[in-house]
Image 1 (cartoon, helix red, strand yellow):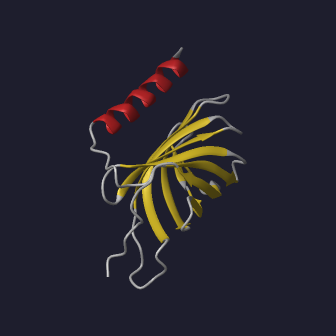
Image 2 (cartoon, one colour):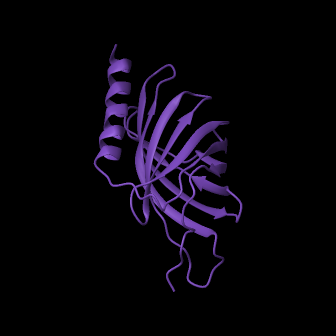
Length: 157
């Protein structure tokens, strides 16, 4: 019963965050897959404003749900489609024992001219339900399809 309550609370928390933010029609929505240490995850990116975005993931190997808030930036003079992001957010693991992590999300991605974004990220975490242990093994390669037409990411020169 506690697992259902925790899952419901997390889903409601994500909906409240989305409902309270103004999502820009000019930004890109993406959905795709992540392959890495936790073998497979389905993930998406949802723009919240000009630079921050919500980056939810559903891990399927050890079932878990993560919601990361990323701040996007580009290197001045770099390739147009190349972006970097640091982020932070909660991860709830529901397979077997229920675990809760406070996770970082650090990555780089490249958006092609056609609707595909590929990237690499690393999600270190503090596991709060197991003696506050630090985990560093959650890394992955991503491939996401842009499902909403939007403006390209613009560099600040």
